[in-house]
Amino acid sequence: MAHGQIDIAKVQAVLNEFSDPETGRGIWEMEQVADLRLDEDSLSLKLLLATHSAPLRDTKRQELVEFLKRKLPDLDSLTVELGTLDRPPQPLGEIGLRVKSVIAVASGKGGVGKSTIAATLAYALQRAGSRVGLMDADVYGPSVPHLLGLEGKPEVEENKIKPIYKGELSVMSMGFLVPPGEAVVWRGPMLHGAITQFLRDTSWGELDYLIIDMPPGTGDIALTLSQLLPLTGAVVVCTPQDVALLDAVKAIAMFRKVNIPILGMVENMSGFVCTQCGHLHEIFGVGGARQRAEELDVPFLGAVPINLGIRLSGDEGCIESVFDDPATAVPLERVSYGLVNNLAVSHAKEPPLPPLTVL
Image 1 (tube, rainbow, N blue to C red):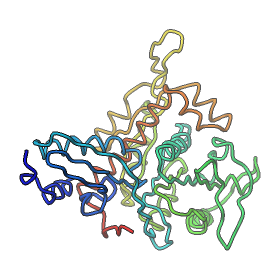
Image 2: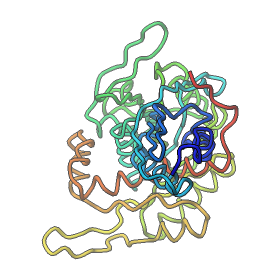
Image 3: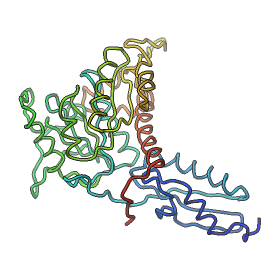
Image 4: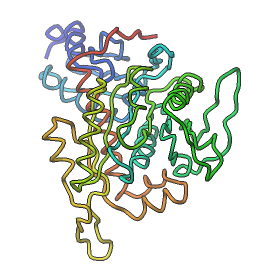
């Protein structure tokens, strides 16, 4: 094919039809194409994605390859490499939190593994290459420090609370401030103050995701969060049996009442695969959350089976080790991937406003 039949302007126009998963805008418009070279029927380029989209990097590269082959069918050679775009977050809400997406992880009742899902979701995003913070807003029963094997009292520097770090994951929890075994006996206004301080006065830095482990039930912390900053949305965790699903439906209704989008449901403790015989035992049932998600028009992010490794890792304070075993890593990574991919689909349909500035 002659070079004159496919010029660089046409390539640029085609590239701008491909959406950046974070902004929903064309990748050429958002300056996310580098090293673009067109040599007769050969095209090569580098796709630059921000760390917010890190879990989707390989998928988006392959999608771009297939997109260009379809739009420019006469190309004989096509090479797409990956690169990273530095796109800092803009201040969010009146408290000025510098984070791109704030995700609340909630449940209608306790005991469904909400904190475990919140912690592993944060780890999965961080492992993929995103900048992540984990805030334990379960003031009455903070379990994140135990799951992560963290202790110690946060330091205050320049009137800001320094989070406790587990690797590159920044963490804040009431569990760091209250002695072990001591109960927190607070009324609503004190809870509101604590959550506000965790968000406003913690030195979170620049984050792609802040994962918030919510208290179980339908209390007023969701209302507090909705007043403090624009939440990206909520992930609701439940087990498959009917009694848990009833409470999960109430949690979804609560979030909808305060205009917090539901980003998806996760079915935890979804069956147990016997390590001896390989048979699936439906201890709490299987598939209940998927069915209820369809009925409520809520995305289903995935099912996480009952697994001894998850329990042992949490008890031993090294929940990150669940990613060493494919039996637990695969379903947990599927949840994080589904969450980020759903955000990308939403952004493509309705790009966030105002437009982001590329620095």
